[in-house]
Length: 237
Image (cartoon, rainbow, N blue to C red; front, side):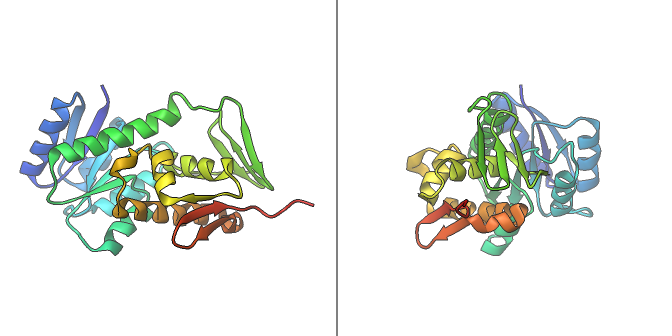
């Protein structure tokens, strides 16, 4: 049974989410504020965190930053709950490292499905990474699929599971333009029929984060205007 930590200060919402997730077979722990969430995480790291952004005291954003700054929790899946509908606010959550977000008011069943999808993506990389010992290489950028390790000029590049899958999809088809729809289906394991425009914006945000982490090599991830992205490393002499 996967363990989920639900961090939500509104008791009714926390109880509703915990009830739905428990019905779906998860073991659920709840925390009412940011400090309690960090205490719970330090005691025992769960399989996923459902995190409200608007918490009293230590905000959900601060909790997310602490998770991503901790080597033991850097790849811990996080689904944000937010009452903020503005696009830039949702984007900032993704840029800080959230794996997905749900906007209030939401259906508890929808949230449970999002939790399940994020966990399946993370487990697919951790428990049974495909590709065996295959290595993808472009210049000084090296991707070891078996070890799930990315290095650039010999130094490790710390990627989340989603960023790893995204980079792999691009590098495996180096030189080819890949649509946002294609990347969502492949890197996010989404069903083709449910991909919508808000989902495709998620690809853009993750590409921005990936480029930033790759430094100068981030330029190799080119934007194909109105379509998607292409991995185009410089030609070797």
